[in-house]
Structures are given as C-alpha cells and as structure tokens.
Image (cartoon, rainbow, N blue to C red; front, top):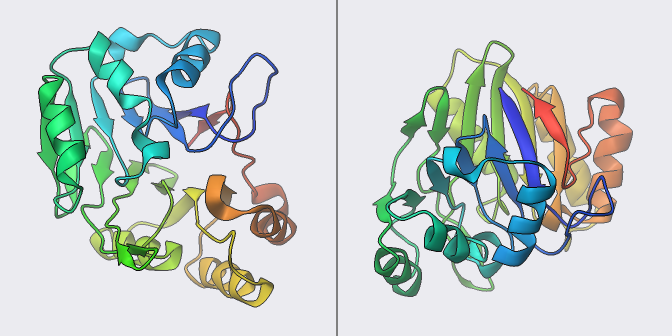
Length: 237
C-alpha cells in the first residue's frame, strides 16, 4: 500500500508548503487529516501530482483546526464525499460538514473504510483538561498493520494497544504520525519507545506534535527502521 505525506511541519522539497498539522493519502483514495489550511494542502497536492478526483473518503483524526483546516476547501470542490469523524467531535465541526453537503459518518468502533483500510473508532482522550476523542487510521497489508495517528491525545501507546486488540493475529509493521510527546520529558519518551519495542513495532515515524526530542530518541533507537515523515515523502507499507 502507498502512503503519501501531503502535509507536515517539514518537507522533502522546497516547493512544498509546511505548517502545523498533518495530512496523508492512502493509495490515492483515502485522505487522513487535511493540515491547517486548504491553500497549503492544495499547493502540495498540485506539487505532488495528486488526482483529487480519485479521493473517495476523508477521515479526520480529531476535532482540532490543524487536522481539519484543509477540509472545507476540499469539500467545496468535491460535493457529497464521505467524511469520517467521531461521535465526540463538536457540533460546529459536524454542522459545517453537513452544510457543505458531505456525508458525515460518526464512528464509535472499529470500522472498515475501504479495502484493507480501517478506522480504529473513537478512542477517549483529553487535551487541556477537556475531552478530545480521537481515531487512528489502520492499514492491513502482507507486511502487517500500519497505524497512523493525528495527535494521539488518548496516548500513543494506548492507541496502538487498542488497535492490536482488534487484530490480535497481525504483527505491527509501522506506527507513524503525531505522538504528542513534545511536552514530555526524556524518561517518558524512553518509556514510550520501550513500549513500542515490547509491542514489537517494527518501524516508527513520529512527527508533527511528537517533538524534536522524541523524534531524535526514536531515530537513535530504531536506526534504519526509523521513518522520516515529511511533506512529499511516499511510503510503501
């Protein structure tokens, strides 16, 4: 399966926009998150020669502006798309999706989105003392599971464990995305890295809100199995 990183806070080429948030496209048809703005997203879509007409579905990890900022421009161009959110998302988000004539689907449990592509369903989380439920995108391939997270507000280890419970027979090939470790100390980061090793996660790609210290720690630990996640990068999983 092909995963294209459409938006991140770093880029593999100078013509690509960077900023806060994350967006990636799976096999050209399922978009996970949309970054902070539609102008950034569409600049990168054009630069990477992505065919927007082939995007069938959008999955939004959680209800934060830097993960749905580019959604509104996309829905303006593509009427009637399916948008997968969580029941715990705010009414403002839900109402806007409906006003733009998209089909909002609220997922509480593991759900198949497309061939070999699943949502984890809503996993309870918290941010700033307030509820922040989140879903991960889960890909299945002969290599194993690939788990993509937006910010992992419920906790990245918790989210990986939740997904694994749904696929007990499969190994975890890769975990990538926002791990939300930027405000954590080195001991905490070391504990997360150890938990990844204990869960036999083969490859890891922390980015976005993971923080530079966590990225460096994972890179040192995973070495050739570290995934450098940047706008413009294409991964085979």
